[in-house]
Image (cartoon, rainbow, N blue to C red; front, top):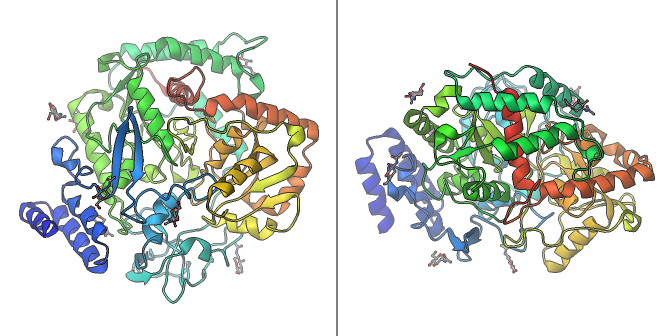
Length: 613
Ligand SMILES: *[C@@H]1O[C@H](CO)[C@@H](O)[C@H](O)[C@H]1NC(C)=O
Ligand SMILES: *[C@@H]1O[C@H](CO)[C@@H](O)[C@H](O)[C@H]1NC(C)=O
Ligand SMILES: *[C@@H]1O[C@H](CO)[C@@H](O)[C@H](O)[C@H]1NC(C)=O
Ligand SMILES: *[C@@H]1O[C@H](CO)[C@@H](O)[C@H](O)[C@H]1NC(C)=O
Ligand SMILES: *[C@@H]1O[C@H](CO)[C@@H](O)[C@H](O)[C@H]1NC(C)=O
Ligand SMILES: *[C@@H]1O[C@H](CO)[C@@H](O)[C@H](O)[C@H]1NC(C)=O
Ligand SMILES: *[C@@H]1O[C@H](CO)[C@@H](O)[C@H](O)[C@H]1NC(C)=O
């Protein structure tokens, strides 16, 4: 059998420990999941995974691994396509794959499709949290790995247990089952969650222990604007001078009077934004590292939940205006990997172990920093990455610590640094060829529903939302997951187009595609996600076109929304429409569109962080 000979090959050549380890893991899976032939084939290529992309052409396992995906290059558009013969792997069923349905099922499907899932439970000594596996790190940040699918079970969180790992077999259907007894506040003595049939399952599904309010985030931003925490470059460069000159110009921006092109209320400071944007157009050059093989590098996925990283990658690599061939001319350096493809290619299904993903990026970073002088000059402070996958904060920690990270999972408790990192909008692209399908919504006077939400019960928060508002009030249309099917999908979109406020509660992670969806359908977003830094925080004033509500205020949701005067609502709705263009992808980028906004925020933060030698 091909698999066995593959495996033998790995063991023979396995001078390195990891190869054997991976082999053991793979074997374990083979034993456990014998009935899933496809899984076997998926696992086998692991052996080569940790090699640097360029070391071995064979690393590009995806072509061998046709069972899983086909990366089609249809007129230059990459779309991850589900191979119908593989149920439950990779991307979801197209019908489910829609807004408001299952924004994270992408990952879930790994587990949901299985009848037997291996769950590893670990209690870290004298900790009040459960740490998944390798993450015996102090920060609670590490814990926001909710999609690891741990549910707290029979564990006294405050107890002082020894690190203990036990393997349990669990059955599927996790999402709905955990609705019952979830904590409403950050009470760390949270214990039991509902038993899923007779088998057990755990989830780190706790509310955050600290809450950073928007006001506090504003203060942090102001502080970091005053004093940069970036290191001084190891040697000076002409580019630093250009960046610092731009900073001066931005800070002394002429006050934009009678602004026609931009709608001032939605910006923190429209004059500074406009000036900075123009300077970016005039000055900025980006070097895109060529290193790294497909599919983890240079393979933009333009559809689905993580499309933001794909669209940015595609448009950045194609940009004639902003890229340079000579890295010495660059102000910024782009490391073009896809966190989504990293998971897709390297994550060992059901392993609950992402160490190899992080290791892979670490080796890539070391490669870049030893081959070129640029990374070491600033310890990566003028390097950036754009990643929408939830695991990206974890995968890029330490070795990419000083880089500018554009992340969908913009969680201040997971290491997101306001003033340096960029909150990347999560956009759910359904049609790669027409990312603007169904754009727009009804005018305020025709929006009859006060508030709308429909979606799966991911994370602890949505259960609380439903508990308070499902079937409680005719003005509050708060539902669970919508049924599958086209009619239901259209209904979902119609609801967004005809509601005043669209509720965007966090899922497993702080980000939600609903924020951009709301803006797309011209519904005022109501963000309920403590510690979430809203997109383009450094330039936009979210209070002009959204309502941000603390998680603890869910019981008062209706009071809060109905107390907003109609006049103010109309203004906010208008501002949503004015902000809309900043959240749209175009195959050919347009001024002030989403591509340019991401690039601008990276530029803007760099400008304010840069230092002289
Ligand atoms: C990657 O491989 C190509 C061709 O195989 C080679 O020309 C190039 O120098 C390699 N890059 C690195 C960083 O080793
Ligand atoms: C799907 O996978 C099967 C094998 O599992 C393969 O024969 C088939 O060609 C694949 N289809 C696509 C579209 O890749
Ligand atoms: C996928 O969608 C089809 C309808 O297009 C449906 O019949 C099928 O049950 C779905 N499969 C899953 C796994 O949800
Ligand atoms: C947590 O809940 C327990 C009872 O379930 C209660 O005694 C305790 O005071 C709560 N702690 C906090 C911080 O709310
Ligand atoms: C915007 O920034 C400019 C330049 O720093 C400053 O002169 C102006 O007062 C600022 N406007 C507001 C509304 O803060
Ligand atoms: C996770 O995987 C790495 C290798 O990728 C291995 O060294 C480590 O022991 C694994 N952790 C656990 C808890 O299995
Ligand atoms: C950059 O620093 C790393 C580690 O500090 C070192 O291994 C590498 O050789 C350096 N790169 C260059 C080009 O000197």
